[in-house]
Length: 159
Image (cartoon, rainbow, N blue to C red; front, side, top):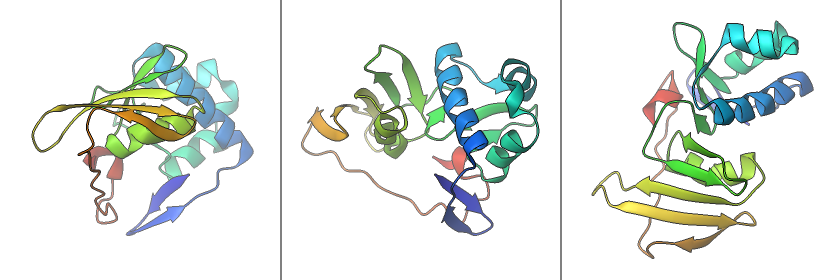
């Protein structure tokens, strides 16, 4: 799990309760297709109250808005983006960025189909992930640019 603290990106290992809550939140966000409020989370997953939810916020595994709703849950965005991912079980979601769209296959441990747009020219890009590898792409000219986000306090909103 990648977290962010101060000016340095760090790798964070979540406690078992926080990791279980994160897995639940990933699936619920995809199923409900919208941000979940902290009140909903605690009502529907009572074990979230207290330390597990606080740990996800502190490690920035989730990003909440001012109203207390989870908008970003690495690698899933509860808000629409240019990076739509369809899971092999038929559910679809938005990823925070193109790199996160690739990571969805690993987060959900299943094959995916990614429909994205080039940030430079706006051309549609399709990638199929199978067995954790890129199995097919719409072009041999696809490149991924990584930006150092350590300068940003709220990295999830800079994708």
